[in-house]
Image (cartoon, rainbow, N blue to C red; front, top):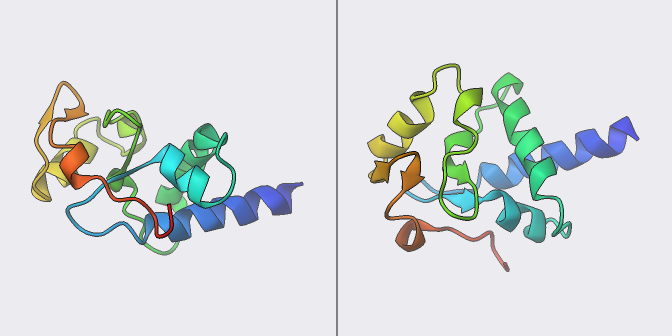
Length: 110
């Protein structure tokens, strides 16, 4: 069982690495792309672990379906996720990306 979870987490991180600079995707979009549509929460768990991965993962580019920065507390500083996104041109107010829809990236084939 642990091997299956690790494999899933690795696949999540691989997809997250595809998100282009200046774009965001959602936990649900990654889950659907991986064929596990109901596992958005598990994608979130994988993203929380991404900070311990030896290869860089742009975890700040993965948000909830409404553009909320729900993973912000996993960045060491509660403002780091917001700052990283603002550096890429996002407009954020009250932990929500205001220009979310026009910058939403969907995994290939999704």
